[in-house]
Image (cartoon, rainbow over all chains, first blue to last red):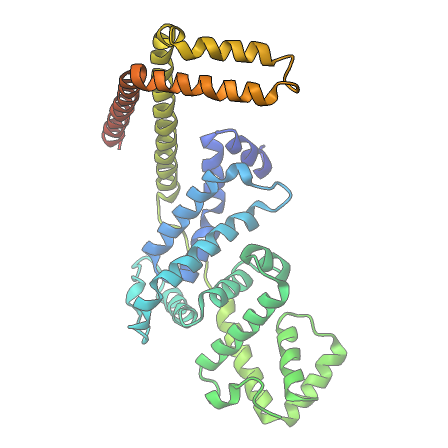
Length: 187
Length: 178
């Protein structure tokens, strides 16, 4: 049975079947990262497709010493951050963040849909980079080092973003008054 | 323990990186500080929500759509390089055809003389050779401009026309294929 490394090598030599296997293997991780970052299914699919297309174009430059998943998620995360930055002025007009972006799939159980909606609404209020860190941490269980590699930043920057995001999410959940959350305000 | 330190410990506790001794100290601080306790409860609630992030399935046919885009991308790359090769090939064939005409131009003869003479005496006669070389190149360029400019333009236009036809045909084939 062939493994991922073989498929990558074959794809680098122009084997389309091998590349299709890689797409099939990584479609869920890439699509989920795009969805949790962008918050809309159509846009997530487009971003996931674009990620694989860019991966195909730059497959020759892929460094085999780096995990393929990290490389692929790095392409996806950067693309999604760019998408979010491009559309920011549009989102600012709709600060209420209603759930209109996410269509209800009749096939999904209501509880699952509700949970997804709830998380998505919270995530959409975070800055793009913080959203990426939260998704990589909680969906992919990435280490700080891996997140830093994927996002092209330092471990301390990733930690700082995750801490900030956790505090922001906790504040959004409304468990305590917002004045309690002012970091560094006390003596 | 200061509240700032307790916050840092809370974050490490969420990452399962807080040693038992420090956890006990944090717990003692949480007992005593209402604000930090409220914070910790909020963080735990957020943690619980984030742990619920469900796995979504990509839409059906996703792999097929990706591969269709990849195929289109490859076709465009092939078309580009095919068109480039066709244009270069056409230009080469036409240039080979006009080479005998070029050979009869006056600049070529003096250029050949300069090159053959300056080969062994390059250091001694570098300046003179360079002057001669420039002169002969000037002569050649003048002759080329006068006698072969129409031919060069004709070559360029033919190559562009063929490349354009190639692109048009490929686009048509791709449209039919999709």
